[in-house]
Image 1 (cartoon, rainbow, N blue to C red):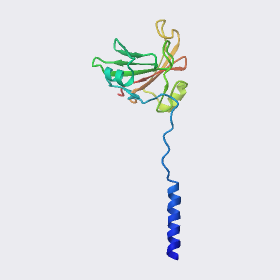
Image 2 (cartoon, rainbow, N blue to C red; image 1 turned 45 degrees about the vertical axis):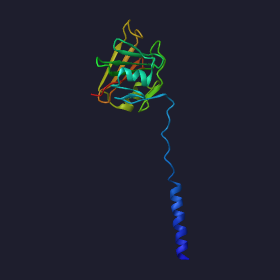
Image 3 (cartoon, rainbow, N blue to C red; image 1 turned 180 degrees about the vertical axis):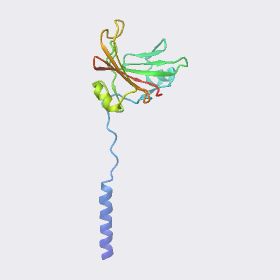
Image 4 (cartoon, rainbow, N blue to C red; image 1 turned 30 degrees about the vertical axis):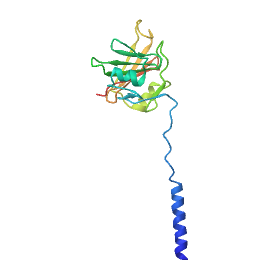
Length: 172
């Protein structure tokens, strides 16, 4: 009888402990189409991909001209080197004639983020700069503030304190 009570107790404890072990919860889904990974890129478009790979795996709609792949319908461009490999990915939040890029970084920085948000998420930058966009630029007269993280492979550009673009670069 004591042995039966012990078995019942053991089975009860085992069942209770297994009840709390359920399957892990899936990662929180982002409301955005793309997740930006510094120094790497976005889904199906990464640094060092070939032009052909970008056109077959990301979008056949890329226009290729003068060292760039253009895709205004997704809010992005990419530059490539003489070897035909992608060097920089430009993700636009505020560029005339481009749709707003639908993505955030792995640290939550996106369209509505501020300079303060970037500095809080990424820490002290490698480089920070200010300038006024010339009459030939996309937004003439706007104040441009750039925050670069060379070792992480990411750069943020703000126009009049609004995030204009994120660039994914090769970390150095």
